[in-house]
Image 1 (cartoon, one colour):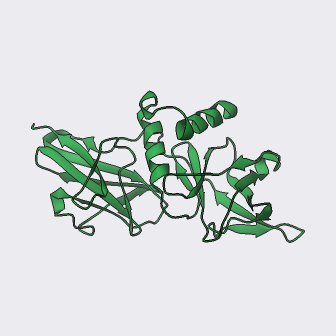
Image 2: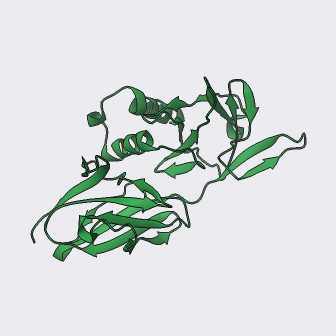
Image 3: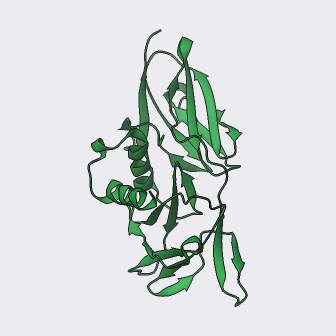
Length: 232
């Protein structure tokens, strides 16, 4: 099963057309390709996203994990923004993910992950604490009765998440999403029928809705999510 999931992720990111994948797989592709800055590992559905960047010339980035006895080398590849990215299927029966990365042959702890520990030899290992997973299939936007629309997003716990769109004059601080469960944010708004455009702001970073495959561009040429609200 793990091998099959790894093959699926590989083909998703680098081979097959998006149209042959389910909506959640397409949203993973869109999300990964749009990441423009490295940060701590992120959990996205049944996958973990690792990122790396540097101003120096780097030819190779990889990672090995303790639950695999550090035997398997996982390769980072560059996304559409030129960022090194590794998408790892969520390991089963692992509550704390321990790992190290390699940069052109030099093994180090993940510099973008603040969580780490030293072993008895003084070697630092990066740690990722895997929380209880959220539902795999998330709908956003979710069309409710009487013109109500529910927007959902997964992000790092205790994040500041807002939504901006044509329905609030693109003000990025009018509507703040509530953290319903750790890492899961939601807001329900009453909107007029018709086509709407929007984006999320997560800790100051602009993010299109990873669960919505309809993507357009605003007047500045930036990507925005889009949907049609029917007239009830």
